[in-house]
Length: 234
Image (tube, rainbow, N blue to C red; front, side, top):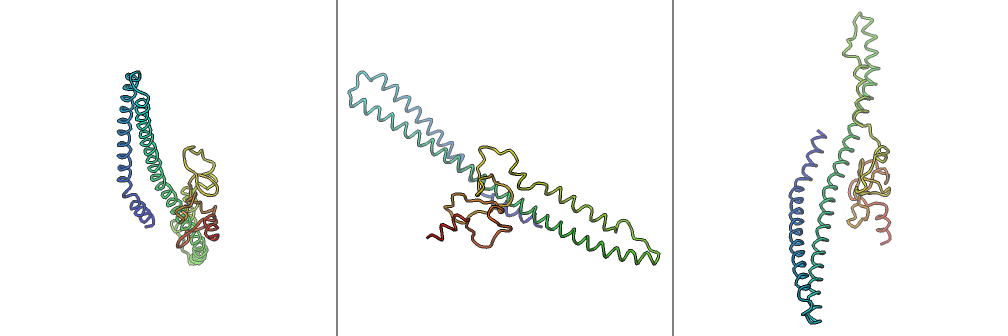
């Protein structure tokens, strides 16, 4: 049930992602075309200038060079816009990846708690069934191997270890892509459960639970330590 809820929420969050990506890629392709047109215009102006420079007056030379300079500036403006779009697209996808990592870590923690709780119940049941077994043995009955709590209990820790072998320290020790952005007060990559600061101008934005002394997600708005101090000063 929990898996279905996490999956449903995540699918809802990425419902518009393909359209947003397509829009950004279309804009980048359009900027590419406009840049190529400007480059062709620059080449044409440069050829005209070289061919007629001897016959041009001083003011005409300056005017012609100014046209070339303006075309170069426009070309650079298109390139800068494309870079901004590429960065926006990367952040858009990375935001969903961080959310998926956080949801997976939260789901694993909940699953671990359920497994541990199941283990404790099995331990209590073992003592109860042990008494029943001794009592039934006195009446000449034998407990079946299938009802043995020992066999039922055995699977719990192994399953837990299989599902949750990775600790935050293991994540930090893994090789990091130099192009992958870092977050939090520790300046590390995203891993495990993270929380976003509700200050839209927060320079860090995302924080690991452990780094800000959180065990669960707080209710309502949450501000990071730095933004909390800034709000108090105001």
